[in-house]
Amino acid sequence: MTRFQEPYVAKHSMSLDSRGRFLSLLPSEMLESSSGFAGVGQVNLSATTQSGTVRGMHGQLPPVAEAKIVKCIRGRIFDVLLDVRRDSPTFLQWVSFELSAKNAHLLFIPKGYLHGFQTLDEDVEILYLHDGPYSPNSEFRINPLDPSINISWPNPVGLVSESDLAAPAVAEDFEGLSI
Image (cartoon, rainbow, N blue to C red; front, side, top):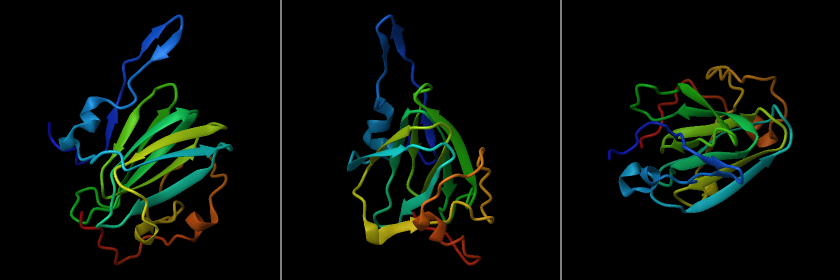
């Protein structure tokens, strides 16, 4: 198997019967050592009550940059990744995915991407698996409303944290991260 260099969505086949549903939360291809995910270093749960809320764009700087696996376990989100890898052909471009409890997709986020999302429903919960611990001194943020990255949030933007709004826009001389 080759290392995931780009975001990767694992789509599950669910077993459905009269009792409910069953699916694997972490497919084996995401756990193999060659995947780019170095193992679970931290697990987080994000709960957001209001539809339209935007969280992001967050990541960590090298040498503690991290890969993540994200799963929406309640509600729906518009999940956004911003490529900040210096030598990438998609440098400073964003890509989006709809993740929901219903579609049960898992999103693999390689090192070198900032992550954010907008809630599309009320009472949304997101499960995050990080391949390393959070390092507050290595946190890297870009304002999710930065017009230079021009994320097309699908719904009117509701709540955004003060720290996300205070995050800088992409500087003109930003050369990206070497991952």
